[in-house]
Length: 333
Image 1 (cartoon, rainbow, N blue to C red):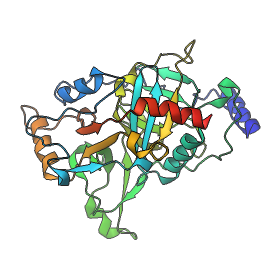
Image 2: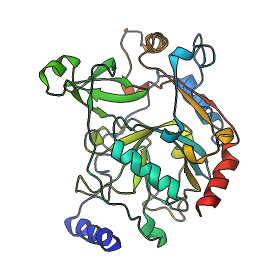
Image 3: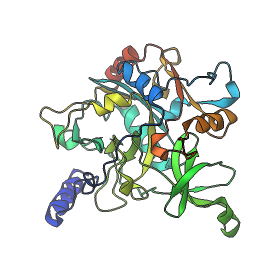
Image 4: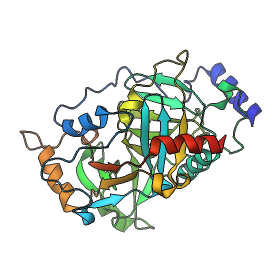
């Protein structure tokens, strides 16, 4: 496997190809942050990066204890705890969109593979990338490259809360994830009764890095800190930051930085004892509370902001996750 990885590196160098995630368009495509969308929510997540609380609840929105039918609790097998010197970041994985990639992240996180690896490629307003064991002379994982899961098949029963358009597709939210999708009307003309959809790389998207080969992703991942829309449909987005995005944005810039910021811990929720887990709820984007929340996000002209400027409300109840993450790290080592 090490020879294969080294060979890929040689081929990329010879071809002049970009390293893993294409940043050629990063400068020309930088988006200015939205001024309308959920500034109160973003502010609370950035208030304490060591113990982020997710999104603040907008006025009039009841929490998960008072409005249980309007919230969805993230299952522990779909929650990653990532610790850096800047704090803890909670990432929800989306097996409905990218089942193979989610399973890979579960396996590598549970094995302790990521602990002690550097963020070796961090570009402002673009992304932070990690997962290359060669940089610290760590044996490569025994896992094999995966077939790209750039799109998924969405049933009309998997409701899309439409708020806009992206070229010829609708944009909206599925289970709190920003996605683009073909119209439901096309489902009646397909064999499986479903339509093509893909996750958007809005800021906070967790995605898999790869070479020019679309089926080469293995263990390297990245988290977006801007909106590189040219990655949509070309890279596999397998999850989304639910709390602690400020910690990601504080990761030291560089390709690589020296010395780089490291992954101090990356644990799967299932590996954290139940009484030590953080509990994360995401507002159901197919519910009436979210519909009312969306109305509050409209501008003076009555239109929604860009989908990436809408923050889905999140509620987090913390146990002693920081201490427990250290314990999990020690057990993995």
